[in-house]
Length: 293
Image 1 (cartoon, rainbow, N blue to C red):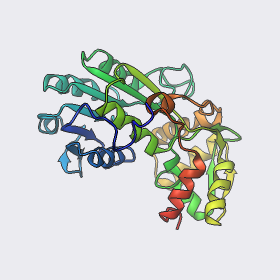
Image 2 (cartoon, rainbow, N blue to C red):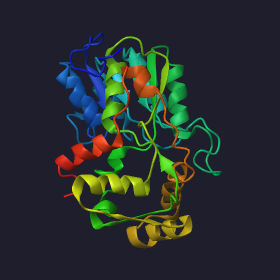
Image 3 (spheres, one colour):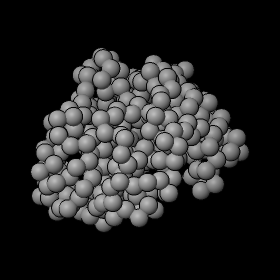
Image 4 (cartoon, one colour):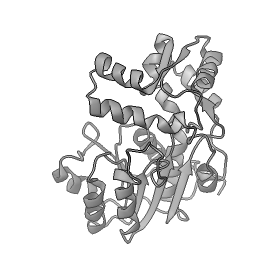
């Protein structure tokens, strides 16, 4: 499979394809790629073309009506609404499901000692496996786009990114690669029953990331290592986080701190027949679009 992310690739599912989270980081990219292929696509979200709200199950049925495949960007709460949603999707006639899960959900201690294996993502994965239809699970690590349109952007722009990640590293994955794998799984045969671990081709520390951005933009941001308690306190005092929210956010960084996100995974190559995009390529394209001003 050397061209499964190309618009000329053979398509076995013509749609309609429902994309939940259709305006988010991966969802909007999946929508764009599907429409480039001529696949009828519904961008579903609270503000999308197709109204959809995880907290309002009355919106699920109209969004699912007539859909043949669904890309699921789940709500990270327990109990997971993915479970009843999958049941309703199958009952409505959907024959193919692709779930955006997360790297490490099946690894004890991946997100620290206070987190159970699986969690909401694990609940969603089990729902897909037991659905009785074709399913594919995507397990990406940290997104490269968190530096250009996400949680790290302000720090990069302001010239100082303070995080409790020490010298840890991660093989950051380009969201465009996630979308390419999702579209292949939604529209082509050969991906049913696959679990794709998705990463970039090399591991970088936060200082390395900022070096790559500086090379492309000429603007250098400093990496300031913090201890986790100081970082957590700052979220509460400066950004209005609750203690619980600050704890969850701090724990989410543990896989970088421990370099559990560093190993390179083969999901992009297995799904698309090519290597994942390098972080430097992502930075070049983001800089050209003016991501960092």
